[in-house]
Image 1 (cartoon, one colour):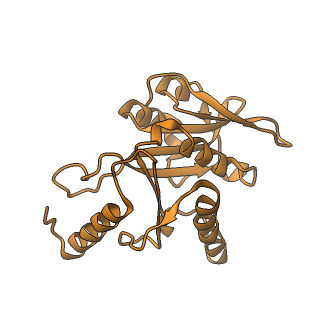
Image 2 (cartoon, one colour):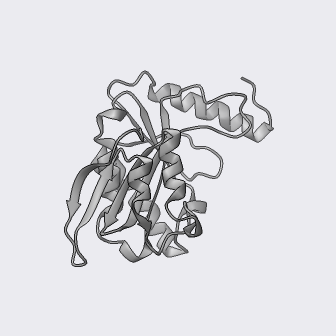
Length: 208
């Protein structure tokens, strides 16, 4: 990832103009935009688009939604690692998802289209995608969070083939997983791995 220009996946028509959803974005393409106002959970607005560009340079998978010269939403899928482990996670093909849409651009279907663009990319046919339900990263409060939790549990499962794992890491309310048709990783193996990691975190050592 990050070695070529963005591929336009879909154009969303809105009353505020066209929103282009693009995937497989490289650093140069990302840096040609500025960051819209209304972000602040997965990205520090002071840093602009630079964290997204750096992610592309690391080889992470970056999809963006743009309106004119601004990025109004993004999704980054990165190899799943945990601090404290002596090496990368056992399964290098497991990717965690971080995504956010500007508060000024919500309710246009941007988040779900970014997810669709990602899960339909053949790049992930032999990989695993995770969506972790951690409220610490949700831009919401009170009842709004309960509604959001239902949304991010139901939409990926009903529309994009994610499954809920029977276990989750500490701090997460749930973990959703989509295993590519050519992946070497099974749902049982992933469940077993998360159980081991959870026990390791709770006991403050890593028996690997």
